Image 1 (spheres, one colour):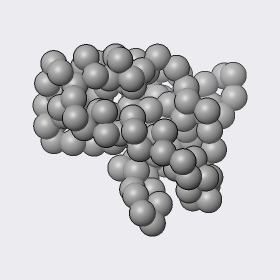
Image 2 (image 1 turned 180 degrees about the vertical axis):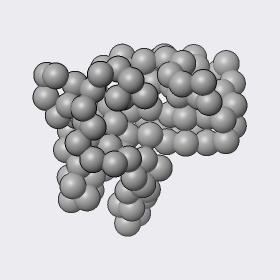
Image 3 (image 1 turned 135 degrees about the vertical axis):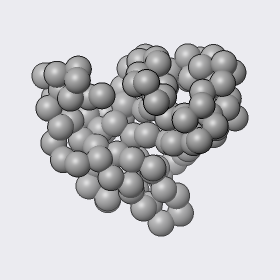
Image 4 (image 1 turned 180 degrees about the horizontal axis):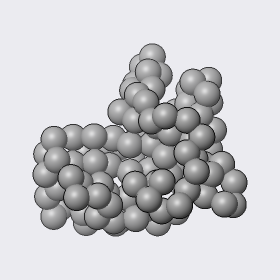
Length: 115
């Protein structure tokens, strides 16, 4: 999806083990204005509670430091992926500024990067 937007991937998407937590997929990319890191939480059935939980995890003290120790730097571009995306998840993602991906591609762009 990032390459389709014309962004240059700086590595391969991969899961990230943070010890106390895990990111389902992360990849550094350059959008023409500098390097960013897309972070993705994936669920088979995506509901609002999953989006809200992911938003809380991104804001947890120490999360950014753990990602940096794993080799990923801000700004973060957050996405959630759902094999099935429920309408409450879309509303929660809009409220949190998180992008939404589904089997057909991007359903909602993130509102912006998180530093």
